[in-house]
Amino acid sequence: MASAPEPENGRELYALLHLSPDASSEEVRRAYRQFAQIYHPDKYQDPQMKDVATENFQRICEAYEILSDDNKRQVYDIYGMEGLNSGLELGPKLTKPEEIKEQLERLRRRKEEEKLFKHALPNGSIIANFSVPQYLNDGSIMRGMAMLSQVELPVSKQNTVVVGGNLIVNGSAGSGAATTVLRHQLSPVSSIEFMATAGLRSVIGGQMFRQISPHSTATSGLAVSLRDGSINLSNAWTRQLSDNTVGNIQLVLGDESSISVGWQKKDEKRTATGEVKFGTNFFGASAHYTHRFSSKSHARIAGRVGSTILDFEIGGGRRISEFSTVRMMYNIGIQGVSWKFELHRAGQKLIIPVLLSTDLNPLFVTSAFAIPSTLYFLLQTYVVKPYYLKREKQKTLEKMEGLSTQ
Image (cartoon, rainbow, N blue to C red; front, side):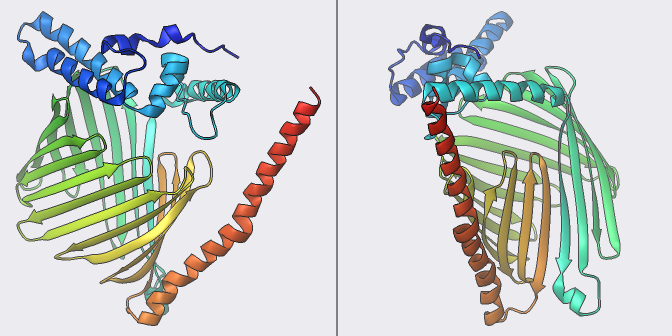
């Protein structure tokens, strides 16, 4: 097991911002803003000076990202960049040096295993729609299905290829498409993408991303339909409003012109987002709030209202393993009452919406919410919680036995 690096080896980031290791969060923020303005690449016209400024600007941003995060800063102060590159995190159950070393070694081994898959980053979703009313009317219980998948293939430090596709079946109708994207990193603050889609709506296009300031980014895109020649233009602006709040505006011009304004606020315990969107023949607004009770469980509430939709959703999820999370949601809207089950495993998702009834009967609406909530409470109280208490007790006894034999 590797020994902890000496603290003196982990002071480079403080030196970049001309700070002492005891600097406060406000001092870190003030120093970052000062040096970000000095080294911003757009201030220099000479190519050589611009390259030097770009490199320094990137290092300043990386230093601020670490030193402004309390968790990352603690890891850096103890283990330097080695601990951060290994994915080490501190928490209420990871405070002793021995525990930190053990965690570091375990994450280092996992990092070596992940190198085997770094050249192919897959993710995808399978959505299976079920309908109880359709089944009771002598129809099929399966209402429709969709499959979406993509693989991200880094071919060099600046170039990435993304290959994906989707298949959608709804009743007796179906559609599909295949998409290829080439992404090229022009500089540390800008990139460009070229995209081609083949299917019922064959499209070619491009998109450019640029960081226009330390707190703002802009994206511009162009898409041309190969079916009818129509053109869609898109522009999006994103700005960091505060340490944990982001706002964005998107404008689309074309067959389906629209403008949308949204925001997101995220911290350790909660995430809240909202969006308002207006189009040439529609409007809509949506919001959702997620509260994390612990690193393993969370609750979620969401709502949508618009010219073609009105629904409300509430539920929660729990992490059942290091890479897997299950979630159950209750939904009520103009389409009826439904349950939605989700399984998230690494980059893969299995989503199963089940339409229970199209009739908004008050008794049925209440029962559909109360029954699974009660079952979850009973399961947590009499099965899950006793199991974890028993496991923690067993671990404590094993530690005590180990200490007694030393």
